[in-house]
Each structure stands twice: as C-alpha cells, then as structure tokens.
Amino acid sequence: MTIQEELIQYARDCLEDRIPSGEKHKWACARFLDDLDKESEGNDFFPYIWSEERAEKIVKWFAYLRHSKGDLAGQCIGLTTWQKFFLCQIYGWRHKETGRKRFKKSFVQVGRKNAKSQMEAGVALNEISEQATKNGEVYEYYTAGVKSQQSKIIFNECKLMLRGSPLKPKFRIARDVIEHRKTGSFIRPLSKEDGRSGDGTNPAGLILDEYHQHPTTDFYDLGLGAATKEPLLMIITTAGKDLTYPCYTEEYSYCSKILDPGSDVENEEYFVDICEADDADDPDNIDTLKKANPIRAYFPAGVDKLRAEWKIAKAIPEKLIAYKTKCLNIWMQAKKNGYMDMAKWKACEVKELPIDIRGREVYVGFDMSSKIDLTSVAFVIPYLSGEHDAQGKEIVKYIVFCHSFIPNREKLQEHILKDKVPYDAWERLGFLTVTDTPIVDQGAVMKYVLDECKNHDWKIHTLCFDPANASKLMMDLSNEGYDVEEVFQSHKSLNESTQGFREQVYCQNIIYTYNPLLNYAMSNAVVRQNNGLVKIDKDATTKRIDPVDAVLCGFKLALYHEFIDSYGDYLDNFLKEMKDWTSGVE
Image (tube, rainbow, N blue to C red; front, top):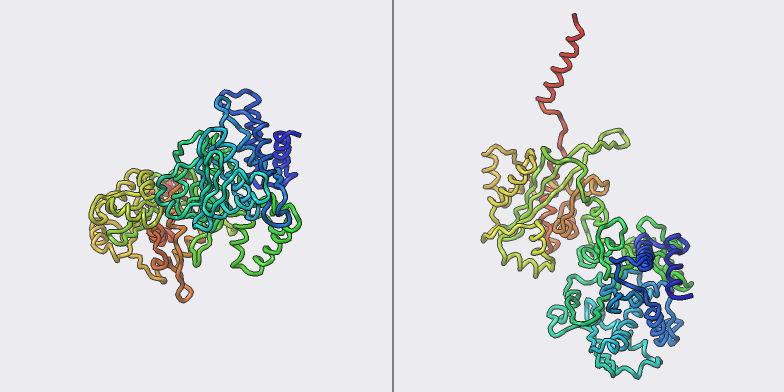
C-alpha cells in the first residue's frame, strides 16, 4: 500500500466514524480527499501534485531517528497514520512547476502527550539537512516558546532523538545550537528578547511551541517575509485557557474557517488539522478521548492515564478546565471570578442581524471613564423575538452594538504597548475612534451617538450614565429634552444588570455582530461580590473592560423595556374597530 492509499483509507475511515473524529478533523480529511480529486481532474486552479517519493522520504527520515521517552526509548520512530496525515502532506504536496513544498504554514491542534515535540523536532532536523542541501541554502531554524525553557523543549528533543541515530555524525551539537556540518544550517532556541526585537533573523523555519500560551504575536511575526525558497512556519499546540490570546482570537478562528466547507475562506498554502472533542461529548467514552488524542488514546497506558485524570477532574471541579483543555483539546476561559463564559458569549455572535433594526427604540449606555483613557458607548435594542418560553410568554432579545474612543495617537500607542492588543487595527476596522484631542472629547462622543441614531432612524429611549465623569454632559442633554438616567457603579445598582445580562447571554438572547474590542473587554471582565450582590470589578484587572461597563449601563434600563403600541396605533385600531361595528348597524 502506498502512503497516498494509506491516507485515503484513513481519511475515509475518519469521515465514516470508523475512526472517532471531531468535526474539524473530518473537515481536514475531506479537504485532503478533495485536493486529490482536484489533482486527478487536472484542475487549472489547483497547481499542486502529490509526490509519493517525497512523502516516503519523510517517513524514512523519522525511521533513522530514535524515540527518547517511555517504553519505546531508543527504538526507531515509526510514524502512526495520523502523523503521516500531517507530515506526508507537508512534504508530499508539491507545486507543479517549481517542485517546492505547497504548504508554507501549518497549524495542528491536538491534546497533550501526542508526540507534538517529536514531530516538530524531526521536521527541524530534516529541514536543516536534507532540505537545506537540496536548495543549496543555509537554513536558520528557530524554536520559540513563551519562555526560554519552553523554547528549549523542541531543541532538546532534537538532541535526544539523535542519540543512537546513524544521523548523529552529520550534526554538531552544542549547548545552544545544533548545526548541520555540510550546509552550516542550524537550529537555535529563541529567548523572550529575540521575540521582541527579531534582529538579525532570517528564519527558513520557525516552530511556535504551545502557541496557546503566547500573549502576543511577537514570535509569529518573526516568520513573516523570510527570504528563503521554502519557508515553513509550524504551529503545534493544545487548546488554551485564555481566549484573548492570538492563538485563539486569530489562528484557531482563521484555521477553523479554512477547514470549514461552508466558509468562503481559502488558503491553499496553509495546512490545518484540529483534533478536538466536542464540549457535549462524554469524557468517559473512549471515542471522545480518541477525537482529541490520535496517539495517546490508542494504547492502554495512555488511555489509563487519561481516565485517571478524568476521575480527578470529576472529583475536583477546579481541575475540570485543565482536563478539558489539555486532554480533550477544548478551548476554555479560566479566570478567577471571571464574569463571562466566553464560549457562550461567542455563540451569541452573528454575521447578519435577524431583524430590521431601523426605527427601533434604543438605550444608550456610556462609560466615560477617565478623560485621558478609553471611553465607550453601547447601544442596546430590545425586541420581541416571536419565540415563546415554557409559559407561553414571548421572549425578549437584545441586540448590542458598542464603540470606543481614545483621545490621541500617543494614548493609542501607549495602550498597544501596555495591553499587547492591536488597538490600531481595531481603529482601522471601525471599532475605535481617535478624537485627536488632549482628553476624550465628550462632544465628539455624543455627536457619534446622535449620528448613529440618525443613520439608523433609532429613537433614543434613555441615555444611561454613571454621573462620576459626566455630570455636566448629563445636565446639558437633559435640558435638550433627552431622558437621562443615572446608573451608579455600586453593587446594589448594577447587580441585576450584571447577572441578568449574563443570564441572557447563556440563553442566547443577546445578539451582536463581530466586535474584537468588545470581545476582548468581555474576556477581561471579573466580578466582585458583596453580600450576595455582584458587579464588574474595575480594580481587579489592568486590562480594558470599559465596553462591558457601557453595555451593562445601557442594559440596566433596557431590561425593563415595555413593549406597548403607541397612542397613534391604539387610536387607529380603535377607529377601525368602531367603523367595522357601526357598518353593521342600520
């Protein structure tokens, strides 16, 4: 059986559930089969061919290396079919004209202890030797973890895999570098400072290890624009516990769309495979474990360990998040006193609104904060959904929009450096306005609110403020005839709004369109309790939560919105009924 035939059978077995597989891994299998169909049909828009020779070479390469741990330590590495599904596609797919590797990037997400380090290390060694020789280049290869010790895990694995290998004489091994003697190519672990500066690097290859731990894209950015013939950026990670980090907000989201057959996102040069269990799957079921652990769950010791860890997680709730992320490969938000379950929040995001919002009544919440800091406004539109609860009462849902302001470019750059998030990109996308003033211009904020309401023909029901930083503005607006309400930042004032909004999110009665700044703030929010009452704790985090405060401010009043016909509608209906009644009287 050829490698291609083996992978075809594997992909079909996964798609037909003979091999337990999560949805995204099935998408990866379908993508592989679809690519083969495109190749066989001679599709002009698919400029790649399968090289069985190259696929076989990488399998043979690993056979020269040695297992470094466990019962197989010292033995030759025989790749599993799942490992071949990844590695043989990286090396097997070639451009028709150049013969170079199709994939320039790869993203593989899988549960821990599934030979991630082994695959990364084997690829690094191959690239600085065989690939560098083939292309006549000196390859710089770097391994990058969030800390120096993490960066050295792959580097040290390279050393261990060469022990007892016939390939060892081809390399010169030092404390901080592995060099290929013939080409001068090398592997080096990066430090945190290397990620910040990136000076002097031209990586032919970059391995981002456990990318879910990286708070910024500093290391990722090092791999952009490498001046080599066949660059390769590899990301192999498990799921994580911070949904604000770029691995989740950028890579996982983007890569999921590449795989999704219903998405219009395409990237033919990006290999993606995501092996995860579904949140609703039963962790006691061996099939659930196999979805996220394509190696570990296929031998008795691995299964025993997974089940032992699940037994502990069931007994100690604090261990559950770690088990789901590390063993089931499910992204979770883990934050002490965290306000929102971010998976449930993301489930409320929609691409298109379910109703026409023109002419609706709107509640506007403000968080003016400090005038030299971030200021946010939120629009909350309640509407009757047409759905009914168990008691037959029509369910009220709420559409939420949010926008933020910052005074000037200096403050924008300051926040970028401090918070490690792309406020500049959010400004370009239209979620943030720079008022170009020494302090946030409250007049500019109100002009934005009034313009938005005019553009959508919204009827302002109530303007909701914390009076701490907006007393003068509130008085002026009240004098202009607007209904203005004070929303004090106290447990008693905000408890019902804080708890009620979260409950509505969990019931999927909150609806919002994509807003990365609001998502970022929501993931940062933590709560503080006082005598059983809760509110968002502004002092518990240095990260921005202003958009959330604005939303909850507006929601406090929107929660009590009454849906009644206007007097004009009532009068029209009354007159119509009277006419119908009198027409029948002689």
